[in-house]
Structure formats: C-alpha cells, structure tokens
Length: 428
Image (cartoon, rainbow, N blue to C red):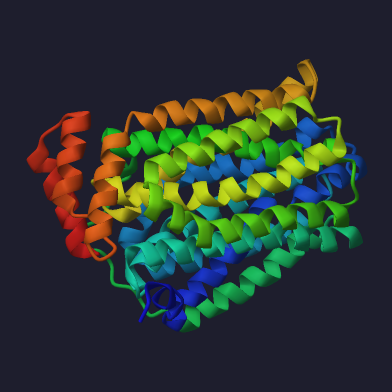
C-alpha cells in the first residue's frame, strides 16, 4: 500500500474526529463574510467587530494551558465531547445575541470549547490514525484546510440571509460532529500520570518548542491581520466575500495536503518554511501597498492560501517532531503561544486603523512574518535532524538524533532530553 493510500484509509473514529475538526476550523473564517454586515447592522466600528477574533482566539490560547490537565483526568474522548458541547452552546447563544458586545462575549465561550477540542483532537488523530505520523498530520491539516475553505462560503451564503445564520449553522454542524464522536470514537483510557497545569508553560523552556511556537505567533500575527481586515477594503457583499475566501481556503487545503509533503521531501522542512513565510510576507506587503486596488487585494489574498497551506502543515509537523515532551502537552504549549498572536493581531490592527489608516496593519503584519523567518532560522539544525530521522524512521524521527540536536543547539542535559523524546516515541 502506498503512503498516500495509507493516509486516507482510516478507522471511522478518525474520520469522525476529522469531521469535527473541519467544523471547528470553519469557525475561524466563518465570520469573515459578515464582518461588514455586523459593523453596519449592529452599529459597530471595524475595530469593535475585530474583537470577535480577539475574544475567540485569546480565550482559546489561555484555555490551551488547561487542556492537558483536563484530558489527563477525564480522558481524551470526554474532553473532545465537552469541547464540542461548549461550542454548540456558545455558537447558538452568539446567534441569539442582539449586540456586538454579546457576540464578542459568546465568541469567548466558543473559544473555551475550541481549546478543549483542538489540543485534544490532534493528539487523538495522531494516536489513532494508520499510515504513520506524517500521514496523520496531513489528514489533520486536510481537515483544517477544508474547514477554513468551507467556513467563509457557508458564512457568506447563510450571512446573505441573516448575520445570525452562520452562528446557527455551526451550532447544527457541531451537534452532528458531537453525535458522531460519541458514537464512533471508543472510550479512551486516562493517562497513567495526570498532567499538571504548569506542564505547557514548563514545556516552553525547551527552546526547540519555543522557537517554533514564536515563529507561529509571528506568522499568525500576519495571518489574522489579513483575515480580520482584508474584507473591509474589498467592499463586497457577503456572498461575494464568501467566494473570495472560499477560493483562498481551497488553496490552503490543496497546498496543505499535496504541496507541503512534496516540498518537505525535496527541500526539507526548514527551507520550505523559509520560502512559505517569506512569500507570505511579500504578499502582505503588497496587500498593504495596494489596499485600495480591489483586484490586486483579492489576488494577493487568494494567492496567500498556497503559502498558508504549506506553512500550516509543516509548522504543525515541526512542533510534533522537535518537542521533547508528550504530544498533548506540546500541542497545548504551541497553541497557547500561536493563538495569543492571532488573538492580539486584529485588536492591534484596529487601533492602527483608527490612529493611521488601513494600510498600516498589513505592513506591520508583513514585518512580523519576516521576523518569523529570522526566529525560525535559530532552530535550523534541529529541524534538519528531525527531517533526517523522518526520512529513515517509518514516519517518525529517531528520538536520539533529535534529542542530540536539541541539546547541542539549545543546551541542557542531553540524557534528560533524550529520555523525554524516547518516552514520547515509545508512546506513539
């Protein structure tokens, strides 16, 4: 069987969680097509509306710190189900709300459920999927790409009827995902050891994990600046905006699944990420310079989907490869740092627009992503070692090789690092 066919031949439980991932990630871009409508119909400024991203992502980030504590006590399945149920409740409440402040508050609750689900779903898919570690990451990123692609289109079509429609739509789809997860996913055993609340923050003491996480923070700063503010200067209706971001999302999905693994195999993780991040920085720079030229703005936004897809897959895989801690802890630590960047970026962008003009946030976002390339370069040796192990290790890097590079590159006790990575490898 080829590795490609192995990636898609999975147990039903994996696809149930993957479907829930699709719906969960729909929530990111779902509100994009209705941002102008929310601003107009609820008499709110763009900077106020941008808080829909900020409350959602900042709460997601902070709540990530507690996901391991929860899942190690009630088990992965119950954590997933709890997260899905919380999303259903708060998406429904957001649809019933009548003010921008109410929606922002309910999006915060939605973010809590999102954190419980996202941090646990990646670990469940990696643990349950057949076809190796790399194939599991591709499957997860395919779900992410499909969700990001479908979110704006569903949001645009439902938002054309009413701005409340997208929120109710996600609530219904999440309820279906909740039912599928309950029925198809077997009860997962609780870990032998409970994860302390401090585990994700302590994990960030490992500079290999911190380096990738900070790179993701800077990347997400540019990404959510674009997602949160590009719809306004386009001056399109909800459906047209939905189609623009649907095209963008299709490129995210396609390049996540097809291009990213091929680029990684040919050039390696680090060079591929340098290229993707560098290209994204250039596109954000062009968006900032030509914000008033609609066709140029749309073309750059859609084209960015290609490099976003590459970056999403390779960054997620890099975290799982280089982190010398358990995967749920690594996912929570990484999610905390990157979502902090994603949550703060739209808020700061709003302040910049109010103080200067709409060009400035995109230019700052381009600078942030370019800085991410510099930060990533400090971990080049570790990524190279992980690639070498991945190429010869049945889809999982040799823990000793990665541990040695972590110790050489970032200091610390090699034996301790090697022991943690080896334990992670044994659990995989």
